[in-house]
Image (tube, rainbow, N blue to C red; front, side, top):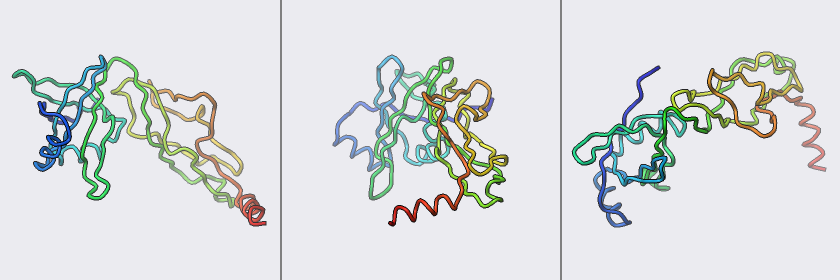
Length: 199
């Protein structure tokens, strides 16, 4: 198991819009760490390490938060719950962290990556990806970076359903109905539909 990445944060005493604005002028981002007991800790974190880690891990990979409280440094496993960005400057203005128990299952969305060339494409079909991510349940340390789907054997008119997707050990997909994730469609059929729409 790879060592978890770490993000250092500091508690902040002041809350509200004005203190948060002052924090941002120092290249710091205000945030809140929520634990599983419903409590929360107001924190601030340096902007650059935050943006780098969020770009690398997204919202589904667990990491450690180091926070100093009462003279002690505490390490807290967490996920990014949400990161708000300034719509003009594209810089983070607030972050929420969600604390996790490494021994308990969590639900997260993991991106789908397609590999291979479907044989249906060679026959003139077109590959369609219906879902770019899948919701899975697993232990925090078992969350995969991505879900790789090999489409080599897909023929025209054939869809791969979520129940058929091969997932890593300890990871299972969350779904009510066995929806299609990826498939190969007949291009001619699509063209006919487009013509019908025009008429």
